Amino acid sequence: MVLLFLVLLSLTFITLDFRGDGGGITGGLRHGVESFFSPIQSLVGAVVEPIGNAFSGITDYGALEDENARLKDRIADLERRAAVGDDVRKELADALALQDLSFVGSIPTVSARVVSTPVSNFEQVIELDKGSDKGIDVGMPVVTAAGLAGRVTEVTSHRSRVQLLSDSTSAVGVLLPTSNERGAAEGEGTDRDLVIDFIEPEVKVASGEVVVTSGVGGSFPPGIPVGNVAHSKAVPGELQRSVTLRLSADLARLNMVKVLQWKPQR
Image 1 (tube, rainbow, N blue to C red):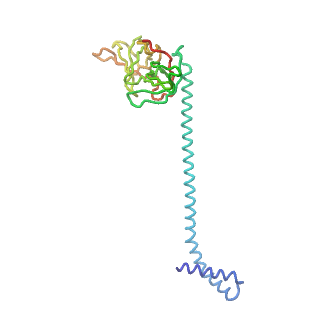
Image 2: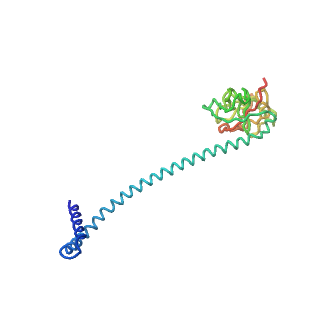
Image 3: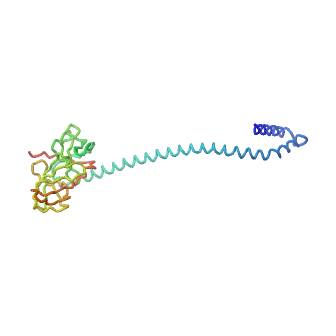
């Protein structure tokens, strides 16, 4: 209340100041009041100025928050664009790598994109965006630039399902070229090496040795790279050597593949 009274009194003398010429009683009163109110005006200014600055700060903070939100949106948009760019570059690289596959020979091929990946560790099945309308049929091998990936098990007019070599029910006849030994590589589930059966205990198998399809059984054409020997040892008392196979094709990162238009020879 005291502060309000002093402010009103100050306004009164300001009004008198406008009306008078600074002389006489009014002038004297004005000068006296000015001397009296000068410290009070400074006090009022000291109280009011921080309040004004606070309101200004609140306004500036809101603008800063808006700018931060816009920057975050921009960063998110750039990250999305970068991810799309990486996908496009990988797809292009895969497509180029599939153009010249020496192990395919004269077998006709169909390029396809992977549109669905495995949903479990042991049922390793993918889906392709091409089907019977492009000449794909059940039993046809599916390869990457690195080697064999699996075979077609189901076909519709526009889609194909492929059982990968890592599937727990998959098996492929293989050949170890160094020893000319033949066996069968069986899937063990995702992220696990294949197991090669039927290799005699006395056969020498070197770690890293290349393994290709044997063509035995007619399920796959011969000579397609399957992988490399990851581990080999003779187990006392066993009738076959323990051999594991590391696949050449990266089944966890399939993008573009080729379907070989080759029918199983039953």
